Length: 129
Image (cartoon, rainbow, N blue to C red):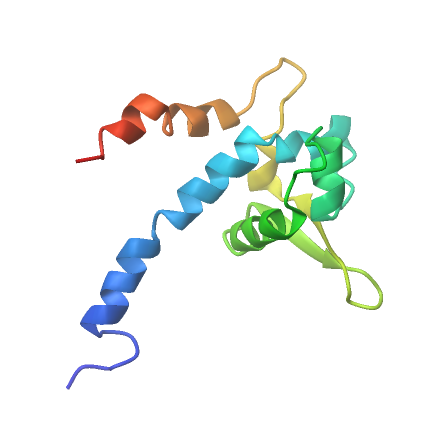
């Protein structure tokens, strides 16, 4: 008999449907220049989602709560490292080695361009019916 928790058809469909979450989250942090906001010339100081939005130049309409969800998702995939303050009320994020590849280097290059290339509007429209 199938293991109902890991091999059920509905679980398989849910996993397949959610596979888009990671690339879309990656696309969002690249577009917002989150890695550059955290990296700031090599400091890699942990920042809260609100601080990241501010450092990235996102105006008051930025949604720190939504960004935090995205950061937590990408933390689970090794892009960011999560830090809790002493009273565990605020989460801050720094870059892992993987995340550092999204920060703009001294030559003005970043692997963020690779992410954006794979999420171009023209390519995304190819999937519509």
